[in-house]
Image (cartoon, rainbow, N blue to C red):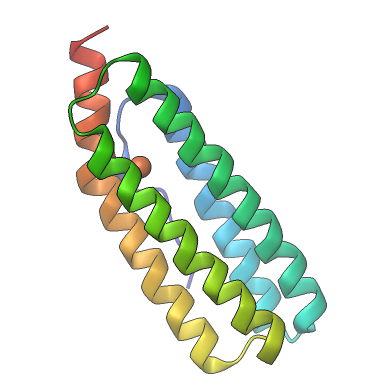
Length: 133
Ligand SMILES: [Fe+2]
């Protein structure tokens, strides 16, 4: 199953949307690497790239929010910080155990968390940015 950038995920902010699209593409690459028996090394390589891209993307969103004095900045950043920590933890178990069914299940669960974050918090934030620029 591939994750798709469906219309309900569009925030209307060009930078954010293009980064979200790339995030989902990278997640699909990771699923492929884990699922196709390409092994731990390739999976870790893609996971490390995902981590660095998530960091960049969250930092970009936070910059936009800080610049616009977004009132929900603190809560949004809190989500980002927790999410990065969760992914760090997953990278540890991927490194230790390789792509197991359990790791993949946890990954899918975290993708669902991210997708609902996009649908709720990111759309709300993009709307604010649009109305206050
Ligand atoms: Fe966000």
